[in-house]
Image (cartoon, rainbow, N blue to C red; front, side):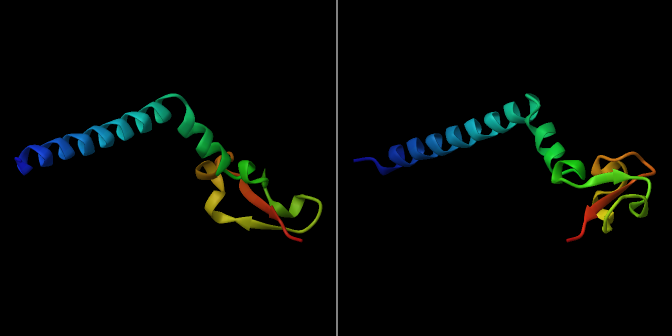
Length: 85
């Protein structure tokens, strides 16, 4: 029995599985799946509110600096306000 031939077959299977995973990931990104993911992790996607100032909103809010501005899906001059309580 030639063990080298079996090892080559196993390597081909592993490479094929990895190639399929890469193709599925590319299809997900290219079919707007990645955009949906980004929207759900944005300020409003997390259930928070974009505003010019958190002080102008009713209730008690704090600023989420990580999701403020365009990085968080708000306008450039807006902040992401998180309701406290």
